[in-house]
Length: 280
Image: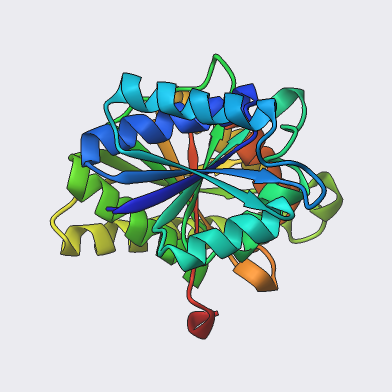
């Protein structure tokens, strides 16, 4: 899947959860993990706090028996993360999030959103909560889809992961109609939405069949973040794969606060991927 992954860290619990998960992946896949510590322009990179972070990274490396390279860079987190990833041909980033209870000191909020939006490679977001399933190798992969080009890219990634690890793939979509949208012609509109939703998951199943894989499909009704979270819980999902628009925004299904809510509440890590700019 990947050869080199980057884990930005600030020593917080969520960042450590991401680092631990990255180390598990690296040990299983024989990858190289870069652990990036970003210090501000006015900070001293040789302070005790940075030394502690470096020692923590070495501890994770020893416990996971994985090749981990510690790096310190000066600058703002977003720019330093993206620049390092580009300069070192990183295949993916792994970042931690505090989830329901707030935002990690360095790695969530605007930084993670910016990295998810702007990174040229997939970003694996790991929620640092005890109730998150962080099992690797993953056995079950879930792709929320709306049939867009960005969701199609997510399906491709999910199928590649499933083929590599022998995992099950689930593709689901949600029909979400708010009370304000109900009125005359509602039944007809719902029929059309459900028909489209079924075509989305059926198309994904057809694509999987072409590669020799089977996919479980589902159409749910209700709030997208809630249905995604509920489905992931019900089926013991180990990894969610979600498509994003990248620099031009986030796709209709996964728009703005929806993606943010899924990242903060998902019971398993979320891999965000986006289509190449030429395909957008």
